[in-house]
Image (cartoon, rainbow, N blue to C red; front, side):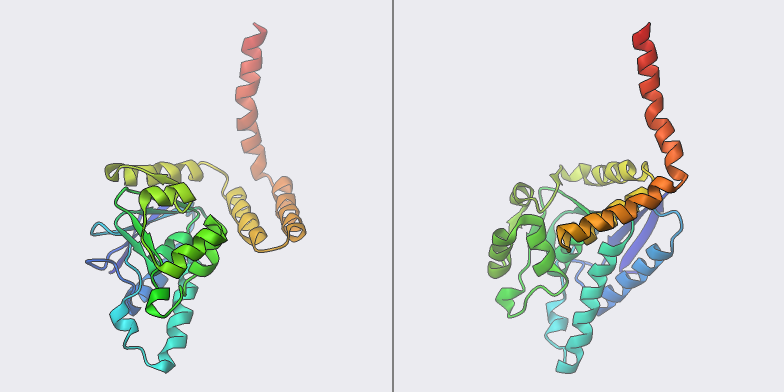
Length: 257
């Protein structure tokens, strides 16, 4: 398989593995779709980590294959790559992209669909489609401006230039740059931080933020209220409230003595 899925308890690790650069040709796209269907059906899943093999995350779409597409095949190709990143973004659990080497084109757009991004110093980001006579087709023109601001996104997309890891961290494209040997451990630590929280609350928080950012403020506030109310009424909060209050009660008792 060119997309490998392994599990560590409630965390799924999805590794792109099509040597040497993990390019997204049609077979890789279909393999990724199968992996996502597996994740969507997985009971008890609490977080997902995307990685890449062979020292790279993904160098994006297979330009050689794209150059051979007949006009009638373009619509299906475009629909498929757009659907793929939408499926990643729609996963109801925290999604982490742990990246090194090339993170280009569709690979960069896959990372943009994640909730959190961490990379090694070797990471190189780019959306090179515009200089090739295209535009990013898997969410890049929409997610990148929302993440780093419109002006910076325009520069990166218009020029197709490479963004090194230090600049990516400075402009908010990634959340952390860590030594290459710490990349997996950092992604694992973040995933465990999220899996420790209540599943329903995490899913609702993700939905509220993602959908709210695409709506006017008042609509976002209405959605937040609608998601908050059933959580407040549900029994899951009782256990977590008790855990939250216990250390405070113990601290107050100690202070009283």
